[in-house]
Length: 88
Image (cartoon, rainbow, N blue to C red; front, side):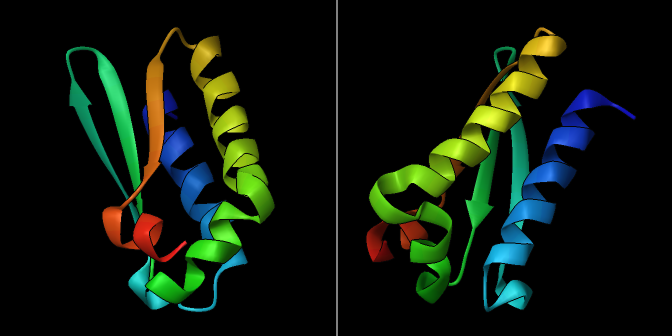
């Protein structure tokens, strides 16, 4: 499996199990100048569940995604979409 696809599937797997509105969630991917950006789209009510207390949950999700990316010499970023950040 391609590393970028594996990271995206990992993010979807984890996020969908944390939230209450999976029908409104998703992970998009774009590549710019050799850097891969994964953007997590959430229902505003689910933002707190993914962010976690003091940002610990999203930090752990990012840490595991970054560890996988480093194995394959990829530069990545994992972000929440604007609506989720504003709600969290």
